[in-house]
Image: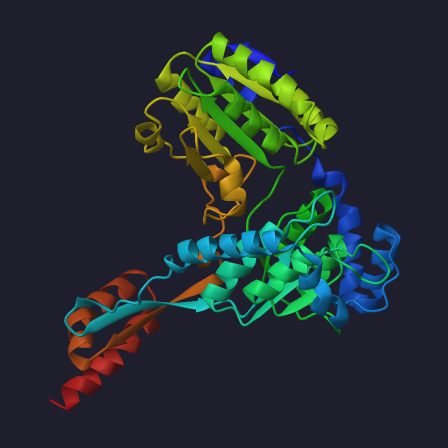
Length: 432
């Protein structure tokens, strides 16, 4: 079911850990053409591409007020309670990320501080496709609101000509304070948020997952000056399991990732062959019970098992892989977790499934994929703010620091820089 590699040599790890490659270069001209058309023709182009790609003839781009008003009544009380529980946990975790502004006197009379300011207008993209990702509305809308973003724009593809979208997406968006909802998706949605149209405000930063076309569009509009959350790729999980693991749990974790789609990747790092045999047996049983078993089976066929019986080697391999999600189903999981340096989010022990982070534990599920965890973090409140530094000098402060600044400016042959200090020092001296 999954390709197994027993004790591979370290020189072979890079090829084994390579993600399924996709050449986006072929997409770029087509995506760029759509972006340019939306930039020039605005709403008309957006509605044309919605018809072309989604086969939906919209009468309006904005979500119908009646649809929005009725969304809550279409959800069960239990689902609404679950969404509210998740919202509470996500808010609690992200609220704690706000930093108190602190003024620092770097030397007598020289004060410096930093202030976080919410990005004024942000765009959230929620894919349509095979699953309504209302959980992503929570993950992006909540930190945006906490950060103080004034306009939170949400775009998601329509289900039909009436502009319907899944009521859970509407409910979650209303709950977290999304200010505008538009029933458009794909490249045209990214372009509309990047450049603005008569209907859709231009945003300063775009967040959210999407297929390869959406990902290409985000990368292209970034070159035009619109910020994006992070590079994105297919979702992935790495489970590290030894004899302390429970095979049925491990199999369930692998399948919960595999069911995202055929391009998802799962990696099992196991301490011995017995662990692998037990997990494989559970995979076969659980796979047959899934409604999305065909997608999951395709993902498993593209995935790998690597057996390493040395803990040091296994840790080295995991850090080299830099997974989006890392599950530690191993002995001394908490101790080893401290040694993980490359991962989007870590799930420690047998009772911490990835699913809780995806939905409701409080951490954010918008995470770096494709090895970007070597350098990128997941989305947080920081993703939605700019940090502006300030400095305020008294006369005494400028006297204390001025000579050093002039010396450095002169050494760089930037006379005007030095003079900006000198004229002030001369003024101070004239008043003494």
